[in-house]
Amino acid sequence: MADRIERRGEVVTGETLHLQSNDVIFECRMIDCELRIDRPRAATFLGSTFVNTTLKVTGTSTESWNGCFFDSCTFQGKYYSCLFGNTNDQYRFEAGLRTCDFTGATLNLCSFLNCTPDDLRLPGWPHATIFSPRTNAADFADLATDPVLASIHSSMGNTSTQVVAVIYNIPAYCKQSRQGILERWEVDKLFAKARANPEPPEPVISPDAIRALLQQKPYVFM
Image (tube, rainbow, N blue to C red):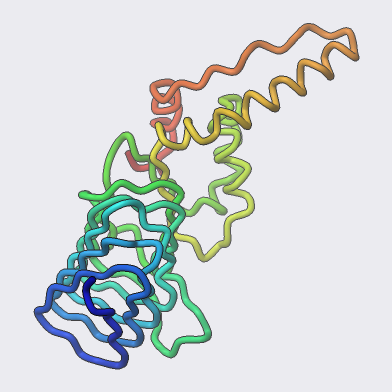
């Protein structure tokens, strides 16, 4: 078993680190490094700055990168429900992103804070990135006739105004949303029956139809 990695308050330059369970990067400055994260749910990154560094994960990362700043970094692998650039009063470093490349990553339900849209290189379809989700929630409402986009629209209204963008992997989001959509349909059928109304049609979950709808919105990148 490899020795546990714990780097605290260091400037680390030009190293390749293989991070696994319980490894920690705390208030460090990582420059020109490569981080290979073999156990992404267990490795901990807190209050650190990463410059021109590549981050590769195996499995799926659900890390929120609390208080971390990424400058000219490249992300590879799978990321789910991650917060990039989120601040945390517990750490003295300002979080954010600048000129980072996510085109080689798979992301779903990931949020970006403390950055500008021009500073993000994002993957295209089947990903869909919604910029300024809280601001654009009202305009997005006309797409809510689609059951999957209705779910996305509901979350947009509850998103913090500090969130610059949220990215979805549409096929993955359709898959995880399907059960809840069908359960709501069953409830709607019961209400319709109780009121002697026509039974609502079975919801259609189609990534291609979703893509066509999203193309109508200038604040959606695919």
